[in-house]
Length: 198
Image 1 (cartoon, rainbow, N blue to C red):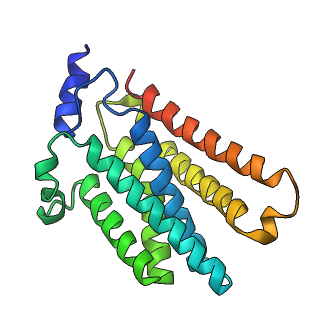
Image 2 (image 1 turned 180 degrees about the horizontal axis):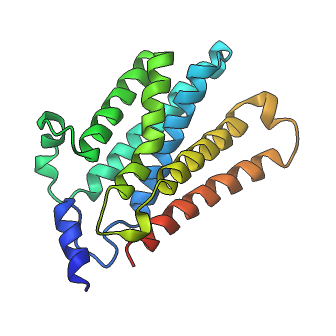
């Protein structure tokens, strides 16, 4: 096993493995990014009340599932509260943690504009986290946060295609296209994760 990967896994509180971030983290990033995109869309556009409730429920479900996956992936689960009480503004993880918490609050309270702001942070966070790791040259550069932003917007658009009857009923191809887009986004996120850990 590559000693550098073991060290990175220890530093980030994850399991030591040949891939210290695997498919479960790619899925967590997909769910978090999708929730962020839905919050962003709801902040920009006023949907019909029933559609608005549905989108908030989907966003909340995505956030809860993402949080559960993230918790399961943590190595030192008993220390998870340190992410909330430690003041480390120089850390990308610090900002990501609070962005996630504020996203939950904004979704539960249905705060449109604050939700759009923290939703944007959720979409960018995984790319910013990867780009901050100097030991991983594959992840360096501004293209990674931009790629994750575009992937999040794509998965959010796919969910809109599935839950909005006005879009979903336009063609028999809408649902397969939406599910295909979600699968492509998951694979793309995993590909970036795996490429940086090789």
